[in-house]
Length: 298
Image (cartoon, rainbow, N blue to C red):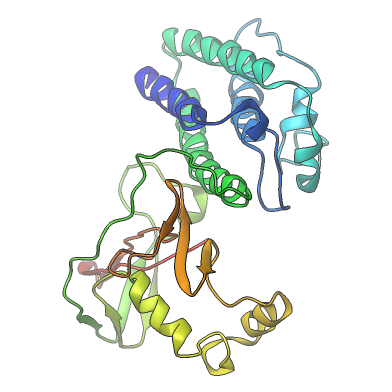
């Protein structure tokens, strides 16, 4: 558990290594949180829910940090509202890193005492909580750098990949399926309550969408035809004059997209670059039915 804790904590900081200090406090839009806030919030979580409750003689690093870096935990106390996170130039970045070191050392010392299962279960939640924020952190860094006038490169090690699967469709039969967490591995509480659901028959593609396929949708007038949209989505793209995915730019009639590797010419055979692969496992009558792939873009 100690090695996993230290590895996850280190990874959050590794994700921020390509940033300049000026990048840490930026909040260009309400749904984006500053990188400094992510680093501090995940640290506050350990202090509030582990150290303050279970570490003997633990001293809170700074009394104001609970107010500054709480997110939505109403039972803990008041907090800075989400749209105001980018207004905080204080504490400085270096103090947030000092806060992280202080808390990580204290958690490591607590783990060295071989705490009971109840404490270890909360620590496991904390590890998964920080990993969740690492995903959000990358999304938010991309939004911050992707909206710079010069399309700033985050790290040249990030590359999109070509789709190599031959297009086909997987048929899922009508039936009663079990969904929800099973087994003894970690899960969040909203995954509990394993239950049966009735699913009508359908087909789903065996591969992810490529840039070229999405470009065909644009060229065919997909953003101008309400038949492809639910009413709320249709209203949104018209209100905001949306004609392409986030990070796509038509420059002199040539499509480009911003990736963490900078602004690049769109490669049509590559996977749609904002997608995240999820593989939910459906169980039919207690037996594996199919492992499906779906998309979730931000």
